[in-house]
Image (cartoon, rainbow, N blue to C red; front, side, top):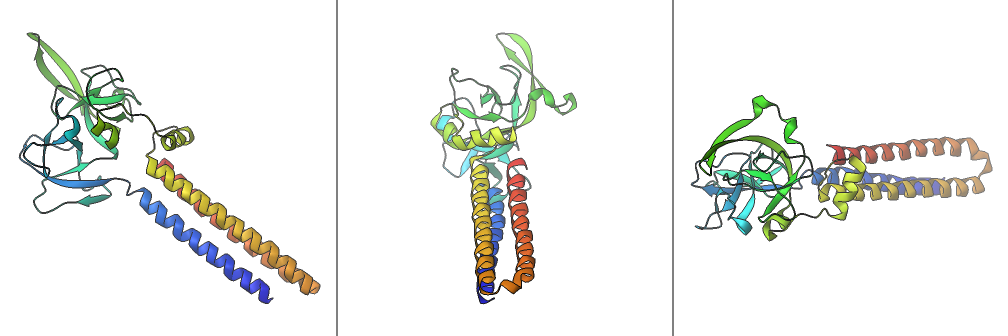
Length: 277
């Protein structure tokens, strides 16, 4: 019975570590993007617009335009829409530089569909449909179709081009930012982790979420292996020492199986929550 107790302690330790890992990495997965505070003198810079560093310094931003290039820092967001914010008292806007955000997108270059590359339009702070061959900085990838946005939530903007009056539809769309791609002025190539996430969920998932889900899944496998190994070795050892304790050993095995099922359920629930929400 002493061996069973020792094995049970081992199992309890594995269970505790797995649960801590689940909640730790589950929490980290939602802190995959940090909004940073910036000062600004651009009174037209609002939530959902693309921001770029102004030439006056690295702590002040303005609406990005097609010449901003490597000065682009991200999309203006709010405290409620960001998991973590880093800002000083002088900060007037919060800018998200990675992950999923909501941004203004225009149909001036055509209707935007999920998966389309997005680049800056002629309207400051507003994105439009881009392509791998188009010149300009790719800022992100559309996470939904512009047609999904109801007309009552769209903005109709009239402008003059070649002495003719034209109209464009501007909507707020969910997009996925890629800081490295934006800063380098290159098109965005999905990473292997992003491909795995998209193949599993059918939607775009950030690399850190996929990585966290994989780590949790590995932790769960380790925990399950430790539980099963501990249970089997304890049962064999106890049965060899005391064949008459078969009922007690069977009851202990049943409890351990319930523990294993519980660990598996918690781990899979955490993975599901990370990838699908």
